[in-house]
Image (cartoon, rainbow, N blue to C red; front, side, top):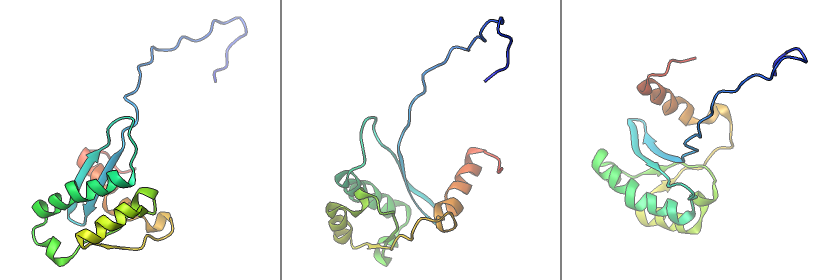
Length: 131
């Protein structure tokens, strides 16, 4: 809002460009860094089948190539309780891969590991200053 006199003309607005829109990114990471960064196609949603395929077809090979020997030691996966993460197809894929799922704690800003281990280094690598 802007204060103006009743007889003053309306303020001019700058030409607005359309935004690129929202893009869904899925990030899998461990303490050493990002394992897989995947962008979802426009107008698609993450379903149980999509997430399951992502684990098997993208994350598993990524772990094999980036963290040699980790697959034989065992993978512990922590994700939230979204429908795609708890779907039967996802559970069967995780069992087939021999991975273990860590229980997701109730949401709390104090318990979000991504705030401490992912977003901070990501901001630094992008050149953003800490606020």
